[in-house]
Image (tube, rainbow, N blue to C red):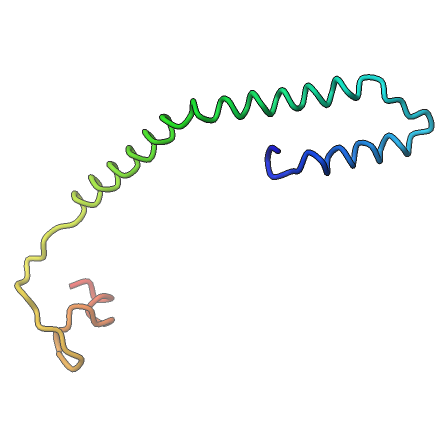
Length: 101
């Protein structure tokens, strides 16, 4: 079962296509089926070999994200600001954010 398709459905489609042919032959069908099964088995064996690579790429992505986040975030030059709904200098007010102060 590769790429979200069901092997049974694919075989059904192949059998239907063979039925529509005037001289449907089944020569080599068994060999093709076994070759497909062997290919799927080999793919299944290769997946565990890729697990360390996947884990390393996830760790690298997390590390880069943390590094980038620590370099970009700068401590605010302001002291503690009291936030209230009616404050004139609320640092999260849309007017303050759009002004760029």
